[in-house]
Image (cartoon, rainbow, N blue to C red; front, top):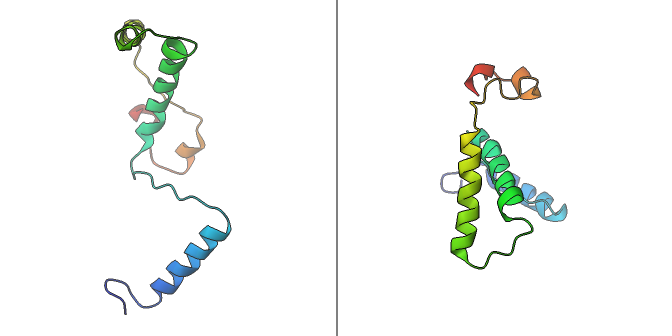
Length: 101
């Protein structure tokens, strides 16, 4: 038995590593409770689209001003998110309540 591993695990790990290498698979490890990442990514996409795409800022201060203006405008018009993705298939196989989002 290898240190910290039950018997037979190392051969399974080798087999999985061979399958991963043979099929050009990249494993991506996500946090267990990482659902918040999906919501923040949409905010970054909007920031890039409205404040940064198609621009040629002369310096960081001009770019920071554009980002600040976008964030102030977005925050002035913000409303609480409720019933986020109520028809999502995720809700059919978890106990995640619609009111939590």
